[in-house]
Length: 372
Image 1 (cartoon, rainbow, N blue to C red):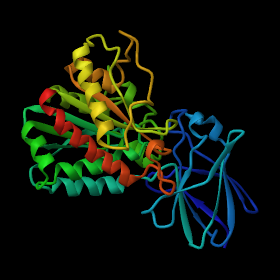
Image 2: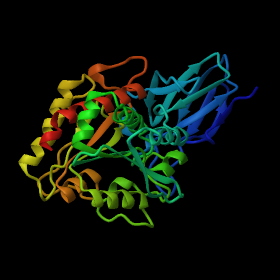
Image 3: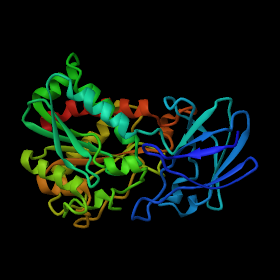
Image 4: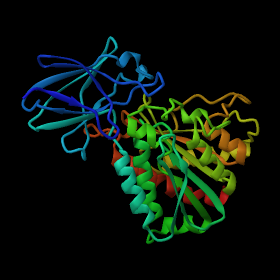
């Protein structure tokens, strides 16, 4: 049987360039109406028992080519377990080999979190006692922007993820957080829900998720650059979430992402907003220090540069939310590589570890909720 490459499914992205013997050249497709690309996810049939070299020939032109050195491709034969395999990057080409005894094999930039799994998460969560489901609005392709409200405490906490759809670890984190928030027998959950009301948006970019985008929605718009002036025409996903935040207010907010280059979990804050105070900033720094002390899967040494005073980009959600509401706001970044300080040579940073970090973040939030 001839080798067949397919990405025509939920979240798929790859384009076949050529098959030459045991070498397959591929390209990642750009996000629709955008120059962004980096996410890939595809299936191979007909390669059983053959050692095939796969080459993504346009990797050097991707959005973040500096993220490829040290990166390892994820592979699965059942779409459940995703293991890392050795991956090479040179002269703008990402290359890896695979020889397996299965009829089918899937490769991905990171373990996918498809819209089908998202819909299952939404259905299961909505059935849990004490959970209120709201459809805040619709994406440009007409998909629901789902939000769950849990708890009845006075502190308003917003958790939202997947503004950048290719950062699938963000929704794995959300699955873990929702599992914990709906565990009625958990004492940490009980403490949090008595003191706070949680508003959880597990996927802000369902169109990009389904289309296999890295960073943008159906209009090619980066949602995390829309928070100052979102519009119904370009970024209804942000508009409906920000409007809902205006209704509730925000005391604490976490925007969950993935980072292509840094092999660590870290937080980015809101330094540089016009209304910055050291008192508010210390609440953010305290959360970060506590999280690092709480789990070996977090650290505070590596991360992004801080904005200079008055230079924060208010089109980004963390800065906008902190400025707009006086909130303790932050962006959580998880790696496509691994958390090197606590590495896993087989699975790297993984869905299960993403989910567990969601638990850890809630545990630390329970420690500080009275001070927020």
